[in-house]
Image (cartoon, rainbow, N blue to C red; front, side, top):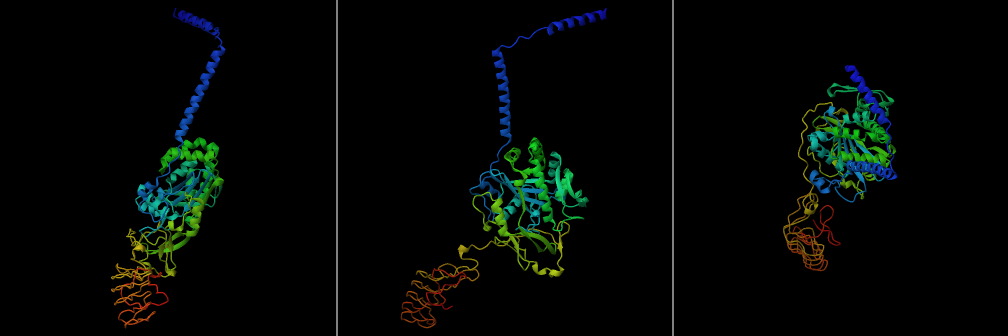
Length: 539
């Protein structure tokens, strides 16, 4: 009986379905068709508008840093430019590759400039061994970040040193952990690159194992990290870090070229995620997306991405903490200024060498800087304890322990203020009244010069005539162009002669006296008095 009920229910449902299937939908009138099409179009337009608004909100052009904020943040800088009329849509970056496995040193330091208007990018590698003006013994730029405690303080200190090198403060900083390189390579499916040599290196202390064969191949993330980190080992570079820089530049050019391919635009959100997790920067993710959008759709190609190495020369310098030589590179000033102005300077006006603080090595092995003030007052104090050149060893501070601790010291005293008359070639002043005549001699009423070649001072009154002169212990001559007196009475005639210790001559062109105060006029480049017109003053 139950089965019969089920069968009856099934027949009823089938009959009902046949009735629905036979139902014919009423056709739409022309007016209804238009209304429906309009609704679809409006829906699509609304969706497109929302997508555009979301894209605009996501891709945000970065604001340039405020010059006043820069000055407050970095404090005293020797010469770098902080503000001025800028090139349109020209942005500069300090890119730092931090080796977490190698103790956190910033072994890769890059200065980058992106000219959005002309779709050109230039990148300059600053070698890890670049000598910079710091107040500790090992003056390599790769030590600055860690020596200042890393983090924001380390970045600020490194910013300052790079700014002193190139003459301006970069707009933004980007600190990249090496893991980001591997993740980025994996995100785009690998990078084709011609590895220049077999690379084999093992360092258990850094958990570092590099084994990559020479030749053109598709590198995965782990292999790519090995290629950019490899420096020494069985097939290490003969020129050390400079060799590694060349390889890094070639690899990064290949990586950028493949990232810029239009089909990689779908990966922009993955790029953004990697940057968020592995990069520390003062740019927002929206700013980074804007740069990516400008590069991919603006037409930036790998041919317009140019890599160079900072023009430099290799030098060995004695280290007081290692009791051995350390290898450095020092910038070639004129070449560096030219490169910066051609490719990296964001300002319309060219920079000059006076806006750079460059270290250099003298022929005797001492070091100095173009700003004139070493931050390390002990920099040259131990040069006398250095062995002869034939017995001086060069060591690598990365693999050698120092003999003495490397601690910061006080900087050298500030250079003299030339306008004060105190310092090198300080002014020729006296304690008496200075001459009041035109082109009067070299002293006044202030203190005597305290610098080298400091001043011909005296106690008497200065001559009162035009071109009045260098007076002595008696009264100075009162005539025009008063002459050079000696120990006797001065001559009374015009152009009176050079007399003795008594009063100076009273005639025109009468004599100048000896040790009294000179006048307020000028001196020559050494700080010594200029001779009176046509006469040689007696000392």
